[in-house]
Length: 506
Image (cartoon, rainbow, N blue to C red; front, side, top):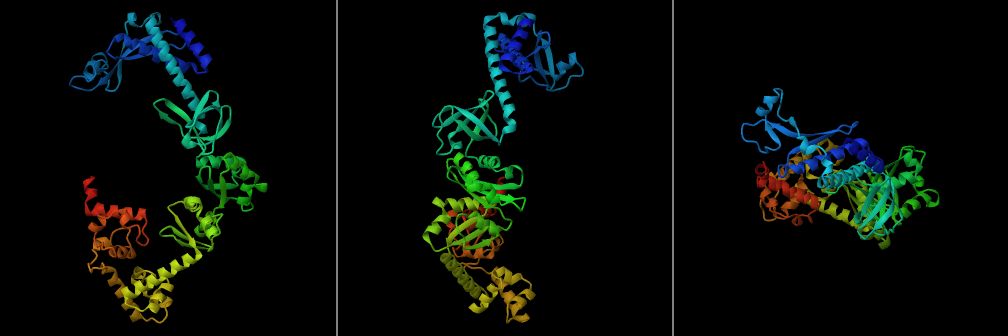
């Protein structure tokens, strides 16, 4: 029997190129399952140990030691601590007590045809699992890197790739470009995705839509990136159609764009061809957000950019030309959407013509001048002077250093500045709706709302946290400076306070 076991292990190890110890482990597991079936429905915990040199094996029945005074939950697999200490006074809960199985049950087990068949089936399954795991171990270091596979089978929803050395990977429809068309024996490049384990065990998956795939292609095609002279800061893609890549030069003597494009566009063409003619914009990264935004909008020509760093919003002005405006927006908003994503960190870009941008600024200035006049009870010239001096919010007028206002706004004295700030501070406390209702202090002090936001809410007759909590996101998105994210966040904050949601969740 021992010779038969050694022969089985050697044969399987040589044929499958699997380490002998793994084969021994698989065989031990198979024998344990086969022996367990001889106990009918008792389901004992069986452990088989095979001597790696002689092939002799022993069969043990294990009992888990549990510390309990009551009945055992699983008597066929457990033993009480008290009983275990009768044989071994050093026994502790969590350890195992092992008994040798009767030789009549365990010896010459392979002589039983049915049992031998069971061992064979279980062993084959465990060997397949070991083979798969061996492949996974071989490729675990290649996750996130380029791999090349030969198409074994191609269907509409999935392509099976042979990566070599017995490794099989799949590329699902969502990981293929829309214009990808593969046939058996085609060579395919992709990036190896993180290995996932499902009911079938660990599987290798390849993607051609991942941003990292474009990164790896550029790294392969552009030596300066591979050598570290250029750095890829960010990549955004609409896979198969358009991509933007932000590049930063660590060596100032190197032109990032020129190096990536190559002589007569040769380098970028090679990458684009691999991606089914995907248009790739090489964007020069700049620490100055205004310059970076303008670069990110390429190939659009930006004439004006107004940046609000606090709200992370950018207003882009382009020429008053329909074609140039359409180019800046891109097909279905593609260009501006990718530019926003490239900048990242929550930035949002809006594009309009220079004329529209100028009109918008004039309207905002006129509205601000009117608001200042109404709230502070001053004429339009005085209001414009404050705004031009960058005291463009009631809060700034109310709480800035009086000396700053005196120095930056002509025609004022200490007494007038003091009166102006007193009126501004009172105005911050006294916000009313069009119907004359006073806005609650709790709403004014809600985190995330400034004075202009509170006034915008008041214009909709929203004067309390309860009224804000009852709003839907769509009720607020058309207010000045409100977007869906901001509206949703403020409504949830109001509900948490007004409806005591935080207390209910505790």
